[in-house]
Image 1 (cartoon, one colour):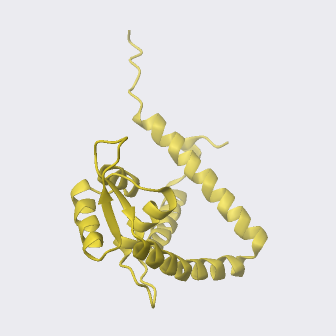
Image 2 (tube, helix red, strand yellow):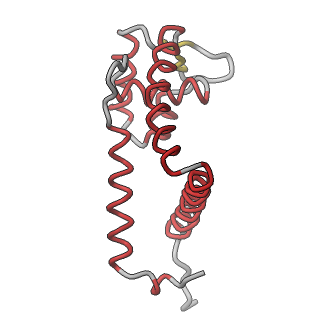
Image 3 (tube, helix red, strand yellow):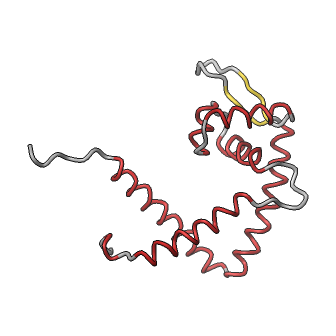
Length: 157
């Protein structure tokens, strides 16, 4: 393992550039898509992880709760999601409606076709390594962030 001082600025800039390029994929509009990107992300979370509170959705998508509140209400108005009470929780939960899940699955298929084509271009072996390396990178980011969030230890005491 390299020491943090062994990672030069050029490598950091190159990584930043590639992460920005990868992040743009989240904003791509797909031909024949039924959902706006904000609705897709909310439905992705609800369909793949189950009902959530507005606060949980905001945390998962790393957006302000007021932004999520507006987006969820727009999705409710379109019949894509609904809020409902839960006996176990005090806050109302949000879940996908059947129409919302159908639209999500449609658009997820469009996105999957593009990803599948990109991974096929790399070949199965390289694609598998890319996924494993991205997982390792995310795990390393999680550890580094957890260390950065820890309070500093006062060594003078």
